[in-house]
Length: 595
Image (cartoon, rainbow, N blue to C red; front, side, top):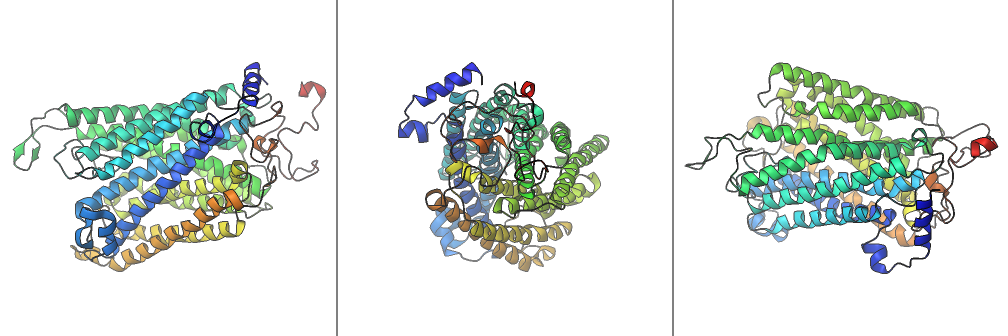
């Protein structure tokens, strides 16, 4: 243990925390991780509520839904949702789920909670910056929430904020104050993410305990570490774009607004801007963002599968290499989002090649997960079920990605429900399953109690089946050209045939959403009434399960931080007394090895 970490431990031992310093403005990485988690869960409920309203509108277009007027007021007068507010709800649903639920819920929660525990550190490298990271995120959340209540309505240019809709305050309802607050909130969110990314990187590189080499780190740490590097490189690009867009809106610059643009009968006095420039900026950030979300979920999946299959993870080094390959390739595939933007066909073919290439390391991960499961002594805990469900969703979404990565096919499928289905499988639902797997698996370490396995399994099956019932039919709708983001499908004969399908999807959405109540009751109820957890309830081999208490205090270990002698996945070993060997077990190592 370094002198700095020893000093930190002494300081923690003699420092009595008040309620505010322990639970609100906490420096403890574990509490900050839980703050991210609870905030993300609240946002998930809001995002799910928005999706319910959109789905009810699509299933029953033009029908009066009295509760709409009660909840939405002037946006649903007479119980009929206004078309412009449908677009605003779609915009806010996408923004909330991508940024405030998936990114914060995975990187913010598990990056903070697990990194120091799994590498053997007392806390993050910069505890104050860590606290500021959460509260900057919280401020971003408040600003985004406020945008719902401005007179002109929340942002309505899509979660990608394409100009000129997002750049001109007079373009559509929601393009005014709501869009400005959206941009300000995203800027604050990016600052928060940069604080976190710097902390994760420095902590992993500098605060590993003795013996914890890079080759002995759990894949959860590797995944968050690489995601943090992606965030450090990608988020500033979007921050610059957001600032430029704000300048276009409020200082009459022309970064993204072209010449010759009319609003009504008025010719606008802009010249030289390019909406395509925003697309390049956004998607240069946007595709790494997919993996900023996905990689931590894949790391959680790897850790849970190895633990619950009671086998060493197959191809540990190959898994690290695949994470690095995905991270590198994620920066050179953004053009596949822009095949219909007038892109040079040769450049499009380059992006087709890089997009197909990124499928290779993704396939390596799937192969290694399946091989780890093969002939394993599987323990079907709720965390394991959600990890296995993630593998299924990742395969389904990945296969549909091959179609969208091919320019001639994508031109036909672009902006159809096929894209909605692909995106929700490979990023939305898969990442959400990663969050659930992580919560069920590390809940005993977070709160010192166990969640109900029975209710966890019921939650899994309702959610897993529901996801397929919701999104799988959308592939068929997309292949016949049904466009996404439409308020209703009653205007065209070829879309009217899917009225029954939309109703079926809506019912599945409502049931799947209601199933999350099971999780919430299990989660919050188990905090106070769950069975008290053992120190290592899953018989896992990694370092976080060696703490003195099931729910460790600030500083993590009461005495010296243990030394690491092994890799993270030594399960079913013939020379062990049990079917696992902790990373701290020095059996078989000589005196010189221990020193």
